[in-house]
Image 1 (tube, one colour):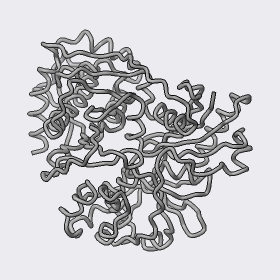
Image 2 (cartoon, rainbow, N blue to C red; image 1 turned 30 degrees about the horizontal axis):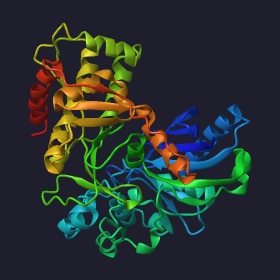
Image 3 (cartoon, helix red, strand yellow; image 1 turned 135 degrees about the vertical axis):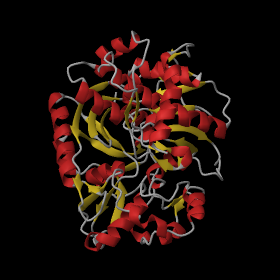
Image 4 (cartoon, rainbow, N blue to C red; image 1 turned 90 degrees about the vertical axis):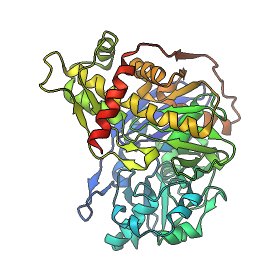
Length: 476
């Protein structure tokens, strides 16, 4: 039996887990990520890596203290995509640019040859990607830009903390928009387009590689084995897909803060209409085609916290089961991905005057149904693009703990929704499998799954056309 410390850096929060190689999560600690606004830009946020590092170490210490007899054999991590940490020449992590930072937006119109950039990187020219964030930093914060010696992704930043080695995994490299997804290497042309020095990009190292032994002081602090290593992880979406037996042609939906809808292919499927993002899988081995309705699960968490703080998620699920009518629709997802359009307006929509039968649970239901409808809007277009013949979907992530969301997704799509054991903590389970592969431990594949079959006469089928009309009107 091996034991691993797993770090999962998300957008809203970070989780640290102590796990065993048989897939058991022995303990888990979570903290909320802290961000700061940069007032030199209309929409810029940053984080201070040292603050996050202290919280991560606190979580590691608490877990190791709780299980003093366990020796740690390896550490690994996954991180939110489109997020980077900046290192200076002394090796200090002095600044963090998260995926929610949009400081590069004002400079996107000046980027040349946008079609070529999509062909090379698989991504549109937008402020979402790390290249745009670095460009924006150079324009308004030259004193910070001048300090950069290397950039690393969130997941590999943890590796840097534990080993002192700065690298980047291909699944994260492709999110910088500086990586050629066909040549599987950093691109001179993409760096030139964004006015970025190529020498700030670190070496590429595949997931499952030993980055190096843990630093001696950390090994002693966290009760690590003498031969303990850091094992390279990667982007959280690609890591999550390792949780279940996903094969080429399968479609996975990762339900979290956002809801990436992805399919795996052995060869690149270039889309001349640019409806999809093209990613690479761990190690750059395969390709992923992705559509994404943007912020979804975070909306549901926030609305539930505001309107129903005294009700549990299970309480709401019971209320949803009894519903046979909806009183309002909601639109809070942030992207019409296939149109390359941000949905800037949202809200609740109902006939006037306010219906006295509507209550707070109806509004929570509307937000949950907004997630299902937004996923469906992108799902059927991805299926049309990939021409997959499979008639099921595989769910990953905590969002699918909602039985109502699972059933809505099945009813709208007409596809069976499958959930494999461990789906609730898909990223953690995916990292366990990456670590097990390094130690030549056979990963037990549980072929059993729970499933949701499509049902006729579902309430969400009546909800969908009203939702679509209201969403399009407000964002016309």
